[in-house]
Image (cartoon, rainbow, N blue to C red):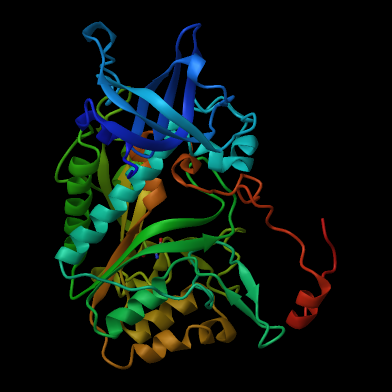
Length: 467
Ligand code: ASP
């Protein structure tokens, strides 16, 4: 007999079915035992006569049930359950894998449980209905994005993870090289340089569901270590085209994947950075009309950022030369063409062609029109105080800029960030299957961990101190 999913049993009234899944609940009465059986599609109530079954069945065990699908009497119909008008009259039951006592409750929403315990048993935590829903919604959103962009002639390209530094203002993760001991790869903070090189390569419309690695402290809206973004780049476009495309994509995505959510305003309002600061005291204002309303999504664009900010202690990547400006976005963002002459005279007054996508008071994405002229790129390197050595790390970009570069630009909305805000979850970790804990410890597995002597010696590495 072929196994069917729980939700399909609804269409099999009076037929015999084979179901497999987990024991979600058990209710034992004298003459009857109810087992709620859960699989990926839902839950169904199974009814057993305790006389016929001797095995001890524990919660969360994996079982298989053969039984008859019966229509429930009218007054026992459960309207809150997709399978609420039927139940399974159990003929045979087998335990495929028994479960021991489950260390965390799974029937609650889980917010009340210590997060480090949830992470240790994340594979159990993901069984809870809320978490399973979050991960499924995320998958649907990504599928929607992929199809939508493919329909518009975008090409999905993977770019290297073992690479050279691509600064986005955070610390790099370094990976030691065995073939060249003493040398290191950096994990990409974003595919920024590769996507620009793909424009030079002639692809014109690129996207990637890209993993980015940044060694910065976690916050409620930022996972530690890695996150996923929808990385987009386009050639022969103006800022307007990038904003339009993103706006369309996310508005349609909300309609499809979050149909009960209402977008406050369309087209999304555009606010200059100056106005945002003056009017709202923030460059990511929350523009919801009713902040109590869980189903309101207030998107907006923040534009006309200053190209540079003053360098601070945290901008450790940038140069320490005389001029010490830090890019507000990153160093590939184009200056506003009307402000070119200010680059020499008064760099702090130069506007950048940067755009931030905000949602309910969160920055969910950022991007820009890029520099595509080696001379301007060199000028920006100089203004951020790059030494010759630092500049030489980007020689490949300057060289590529001499072989015919289309004007280009793009954006990178955060996937985890967007889903987390759209679902109104209290932490971004609620939409990531296996996030690191706030201390940088991976979920379930014990990393980071030490390396053995042989590994270290192959890498030419000696560990001076271990905490
Ligand atoms: N690379 C940028 C980031 O990761 C996005 C972009 O400029 O497209 O934030």
